[in-house]
Amino acid sequence: MKPSPFRALCLAVLVGICMNRDVCSASQAETEVVARLLALLLSSGRVVLAHNQPLINDATKGEKGFTAAAFEAQVVEEFKKRSGGIDLRQLDAVMIPDKGKSLLQALLAAGQEVIDGKQAIINERFLGYKNVIPATWGTWTSQKFSQRNHVLLKQTALDYRNPNNAPDEFETRILRKFAAPDYPREGQQVLSEVTNGGKTLRLMLPLYHKKDCLVCHGTPKGEIDISGYRKEGHREGEAAGAISVAIPLSE
Ligand code: HEC
Image (cartoon, rainbow, N blue to C red):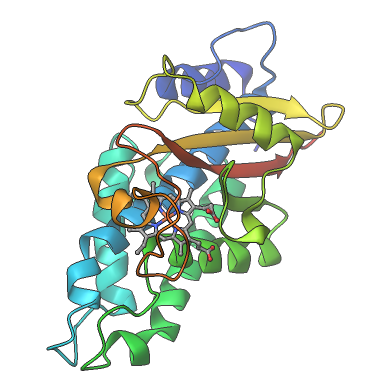
């Protein structure tokens, strides 16, 4: 179905991304919505992993019940909160292009597959840290998702740990904006641009350090954290990085 410019504009206004009637084509506005939702979904999965971290790391417990189904149920709830009420189990009712719906479903499925594939280690007893954390889940999930779809999804940072997460030129420029002390820390303030001569929509969702993050990314700088990397010396509220999405724009 060809989306009407009016509907696209409504959608765009609804999610507060692209407000200028003159510069937003219908397809661009809708693609932007989809990119934002994909970033929010990856971010929601990260939050669910973080909530379950004490359970996952519990060395006194074998079977933990953190199955792909349990994970899915929690992500659905978290995403509903973050997206202003979108139910991943009832996407039919949501006004986004069908392509966007299938991308969201594919991302959720990739995230579940990762959790499913880690059941043996998650349920290991007498083992605390298992390297199943928001960042590794995010890396594995976005790799699976990006390989299967014509959409790039990744986590990135200026002082990245995983070389596969290194920012490109566009990402570096946006990450610097996110790091500015006056950039809003609340409200999921994404930035997006059309790049590649009008062919690609790129969008980034910033991540800021909270207390929980600093166990690994905090001080003292240079000390080895539980995951085996050197702590970056960050403080609460500082920019941690971003979730980055690149989607081809249909002509
Ligand atoms: C248990 C230690 C640990 C905690 C806690 C942690 N991280 Fe990380 N973080 C890592 C590891 C390990 C990686 C590298 C993951 C990979 O291999 O892709 C990473 C990677 C990242 C990246 C991707 C860029 C890069 O460095 O490769 C971002 C962004 C990030 N973390 C942000 C956060 C935020 C925000 C929090 C808190 C909500 C957080 N991290 C909490 C260990 C941690």
